[in-house]
Length: 262
Image (cartoon, rainbow, N blue to C red; front, side):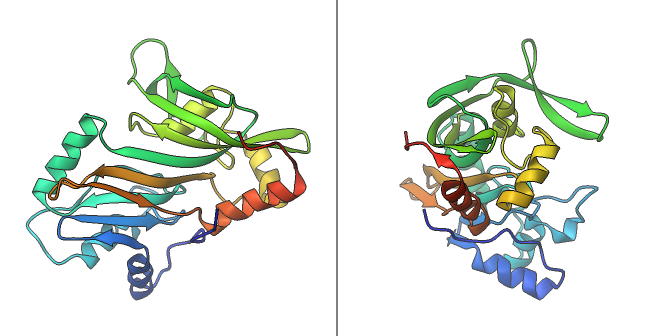
């Protein structure tokens, strides 16, 4: 796999931000906008991120004024890179919402996990939002009763042995679109995503930052497949691994005892 884009901190200068945003447009027509979001860019504002320095703010600056508020068809966490889909018209919003409910939008992710996960499988665990009161952060926790149904298919692409740890490079396809679904599911089976301090081990992540150059959670939204809301054609978009993710894999391949691709 060839690297594409770097982990990027959102620049302060508004013109530079918009220029960088335009570089990351993968596809655009009258109804849709597909963006290859870099890690480090939040989608919406919150108490940690001013609303004027978000992907939504850039979209509103970029698009001409309209009586229809554009809407994202899925969410990506701030430190997750990859493809995100935005509807620009009411009819597109309605069509994509229907496809989401019917699970007709197919999303494929690449993730690097701590530990040796089984070669392939399906994780079916209901999730419920709970507060981590030590850090005052919300996280999704697997529950037996209540919660929201969530399911993730995955297959292992490579397995690495590095020092005392093993690492699994996987392709994951969430059948549902719950908050933090992949992060919570992989952590629940004992294989948290590398670089994810909320669901993994901060101490190990600090070590991997020094030794492998891990800067953030190793999660990338690589493929989007859906039916175009107007033409009704099947469309597919792909974003190559960003340079920071590809660099970590390259170091693992060179420094570790790598097993054969499954």
